[in-house]
Amino acid sequence: MLEWPAKQALRIMLTGGDMLHHYPPANLPFLLVNNYGPTECAVVATSGPVLPDARPDVLPPIGRAITNTRLRLLDETLNEVPQGTPGELHIGGPSLARGYHNRPDLTAEKFIPDPFGEPGGRLYKTGDLARMLPDGQIAFMGRIDDQIKIRGYRIEPKEIVSVLNRHADVRDSLVAAREDAPGEKRLIAYVMLNPNSASTHTALCDFLREHLPEYMIPAAFVRVDAFPMTPNGKIDHAALPEPERANTVADDVSASPATDTQRRIAEIVAGLLDRKDIGLEDNFFMLGGHSLLGAQLIARLRNTFGVEIGLRSLFTAPTVAALSVEIERLASKKEALKTPERAPVCGAPQPCTEANPS
Image (cartoon, rainbow, N blue to C red; front, side):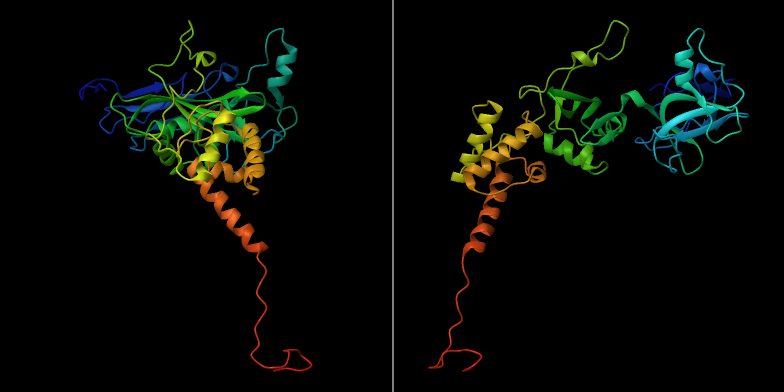
């Protein structure tokens, strides 16, 4: 990164038009001011100075509302969200445009009555996701259209990317949802790794788990040399490769199943995933498994071993080794319930009953 000369006439720099990804360095010789605002509200709606900050996992804020501008962070039902909770940014005030020329339908959709203001007031639905910081500034989080909804959870890919890019072996990353099986979405991370990277699937997952909940952990990490681009210079999501064993970040070479239980589990998994060999530590989901196949796997394990494994257990024990431990635990528990308790032995010559106690 190039450094600015210490001696120069520039005192204040205004930035806007795109997301500011990094805080300025401590030795920046001028003040950096971040601006935000769509054309529909006369370009600038928020503004604020961005001071140096060493935290790489936090995006710089977009400041506070400028004079005569109102900001609302609302949910899908147009109720205000609590502080710190993401919501759609709505803008009100005299700077709003009247609407879109000859587009009354789009005007009605985007310029809505202000449910909190005076009669006749309006709000512009920006389509941008943001949250209120403790100091009153606004944190921009990307477009609502970029949100991913998987198993009922709303996920911001940029939050995962922000953490993943902090890993020492990751040069850049992209997170997307793939629906390789109808109705089954999976989070996939596409990573540009350093040439000498020795990171494994488990290591990357463990790193993310230090900062993110389980539902935000990608099912697979696909190695790419560069992201595919459209002629307009944007990432071509349709051209992102499908996760395959040859291009995914895997764990270390997995040992072969050793016990009879492990071998039978491996055969079942291999049949479902159409693979020849399944290692002891191969991850069912990383190899292409999903919840629909998971339901079939559970049914086959039930028929083979006579135990009932929940789908949640499959997510926490997705390898042959882990499934083997779980199956043997359940089988042992089932056997213990079937074994009758031994009757107490009484040393007296007469029966031990309440009527004739020993």
